[in-house]
Length: 324
Ligand SMILES: [Zn+2]
Image (cartoon, rainbow, N blue to C red):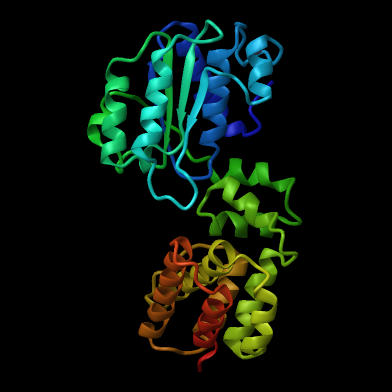
């Protein structure tokens, strides 16, 4: 067995080495950018901790591994933030702690994966502190966070912080080649995803049937006046607004603004071409910032629990984009 994300191998091997040497910290905090595969890494480590074998990876055949495969291992707990909730609730944390008080049902280790340690609020984090300070026997915490700055320092200080690096552009690009129609698509997706390979992959595999380069073309067409707002909206309404349309326009706007300010950024051809359509409008710099602002506001609204009308938000953006 190996990890399907090759850039995670060095860090996995390092942690597994600590485990083999008997000095794996009881609380490992995996910190790194979103969408680089930290969950998979945590899962692989948890499986290794629960497997009764001695190899680099969990054996996949022992009783523990079979229980893991059917998602019924009694000694693995995943603490995650409930959907539409901003924070992991203190009651959830208490339930986990209660469970840890008993001994391991399979006689080995007990593992808790804290899926979003950066979404523990103060009371949840405080509830967890004691377990981190004085863990029960054979208990391991594997915590994940998109950066440690949002965690309570008291929590961080009780963990071994393992930084998980974002893969290099070349590593990410090589891995994505197999999933894309062209190298240009890969470059564009990685640019929009700001280097996160898994986010880039979801852009390349979007279910809308509208490719990433089509989204660029439609937005360019709307900006240049080659296509009307309703015509553009009809196609783009099939595409995820928060995850794809807005990030694409955002990238074009950032590029256009950087060029206007005589500090052009490097970027793929698709982004440069959208930026050019925006620049050809000859707007004052404030108008570009205003549209950027509108994108940000719409995105925040979409991420909130306000449940806004996606089509209206899209049309509002396109109306501004089409202005002369
Ligand atoms: Zn096993």
